[in-house]
Length: 312
Ligand code: SF4
Ligand code: MG
Image (tube, rainbow, N blue to C red; front, side, top):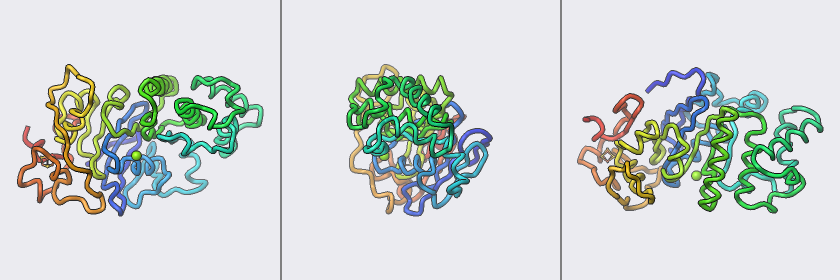
């Protein structure tokens, strides 16, 4: 498979523990790529490889044409600026002993940008951008609600004007009403700062409104990818169909019958033979047990890894 990429981010990663197995993804400037799969499928690992919190044991991370896979320390710094992360639980990433002002100042200190006055001004600006009052700067993370803490995490992620933010389930832990506020904020910031997002989620409902394209992951592999509209209207992979049928809200465009997946996700360390989805697939045929399907183009940019996708 080949993606011509000059500006976007191309990732080929394979981890020896097979959490992520030979995945190819491209994220184009300014777009949101939704990455969806059940817990344990490797999507967080993939996100951390892209943002280089982890070093992939195989494959490549190309960022705007530069191979950043094995860069370290000083060489990695300029790229780190441009690729940031937002986590599911902001407490995981916010230092509880620091004030919000100190937390937001830190990226500027690490990257040696500006003096104290400049940093204070940027902190106020960032708080304002994410809808928090300036007085938040003197308070500590525990004094804020979950939604407010996520705003602080977002403020820190955008501090250095990144080009890509890996959003690892940023709203999964929030109440539904707060979820939409945070999603709206992410949307606004994307417009304003021309950000690209890799938006990781375990269900399709959350990524539906925010994604331009969607990639579906199962046991460390991408099994289907297409623009968001196509994924919802014409899913080709049985796993994608089961994820769509699990979306609770009735969707008038949905032509898919409700299909409940049985069983747990098998271990990625010892995946089933052939198509790794075969033990749970309602459409499996004999060939599925012995032969792994390739991710192939089924229509333009729409790709699916299923033997049944091969014949239209
Ligand atoms: Fe199901 Fe077979 Fe397609 Fe795998 S290849 S998704 S088991 S039909
Ligand atoms: Mg995860």
